[in-house]
Length: 244
Image (tube, rainbow, N blue to C red; front, side):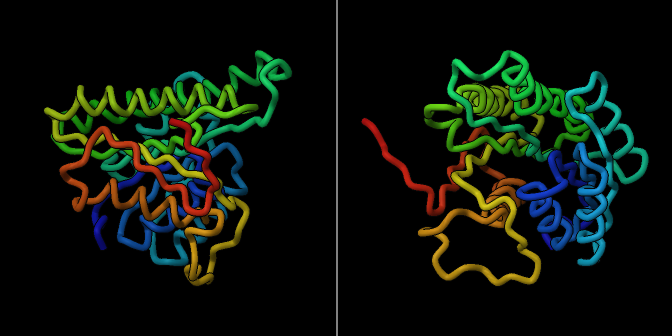
C-alpha cells in the first residue's frame, strides 16, 4: 500500500491507460480524482476503483476549457485532500499526413496534450510547494522521443511535454517536488484488463495499459525519491528502427 493517505489526480482517466493508472493507485491505497471528458466512461472507472476498495471522485471535464484545471484542483482539495500526485495522461491523437492535418486538429492536439498538462501543473504546484512535497508524472510517448511521419502534431506536443517535464523538474527540485515523464510505445488501449493475468512475453507484444501504469506508479512512489527530470521509455513489443 505505497500510496495510503495520498490523493492522486489522473487526467484522461475514463479508459485505457488513464483508467489503468487510477486502478493501480487505488489498489495501493490512494484516493483517486478521475478527470475525463465523457461522464459514462468516468463512472465506469469510479465503479472499478470502488470495486477494489478505493475512493474515487469523478470529475467530467473538458480540460481545454478556461479555468478547468483550477476548478478540478479546487474540488479535489475540498472533497478529498490536497493533491499529492498529478498524472497528466489525457491526450488526443490524429494519424494524418501533415498537409492534410487541419489547423483545428493541430490546435486540439496541442491544447489537450500539452497546454492542459501545463495548466494542471500550474493548478497543483502552489500547494505542493507550500507542503514541500509532490510528484508529477506526465505521459508522453515514443513520439516524444523520435518524430515519425503522419504524427506531426502528436510529436510536437509530446516533445514539448518532455521539455516541460525537464524544466519543471529543475525549477521545483528545491521544493522536493519530482517531475518525470513516461514514454509508451504502442498500447492496446481497448483491451479489457479486468481479471486478466499478466502476459508471459510482454516484450514481444504491444503494451497493455497496465504496463504503462506500473511505470507511472514507480515514478510516483518513494522508491523513485532520487529521480526527477527523467523520461522513462516503456516500449514493450513496439518495433523500432533506431537511426544514428
